Amino acid sequence: MKVRQILESKGGELATITPERTIEEAVGELGRRRIGSLVVVDDAGSLIGILSERDVVSAMAEHGMDLTRSHVRDLMTHTVTTCRPDDEVTDVTVKMTDGRFRHVPVMDKGQLVGLISIGDAVKARIQELEHEREALRDYISSG
Image (tube, rainbow, N blue to C red; front, side, top):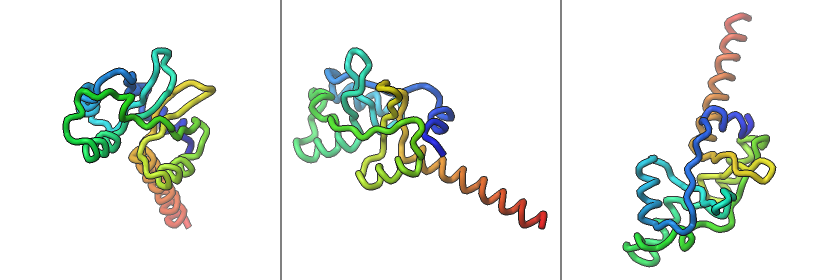
């Protein structure tokens, strides 16, 4: 399965935030949307980082609980692993597992076009396995 197929099933909405926003605003956005990360973009909409729940929790553990006045730029991950729409989901899943992160922005010709999560990848794999199971069941019952 290709990353493109996951993006098509998810729809076009992508949760982004700018680096000058506060962590309080970012955490509010994460909570409202019930998501685990926000893609950080500049004024032109270009990818410049990613802010995850893990980034916030790690900073709280290191610096204390009151990060609400800190800015997204202070806590975001600056070096972001990305993928392309035509990448295989299994390859992206390996990157996530090896890198110990759960969200990967999707870039197409230099433009940010989406985000996939480890949950999206697992759901896609389960769907593939269900299709295979049905095909095997049909084959066995016809035989």
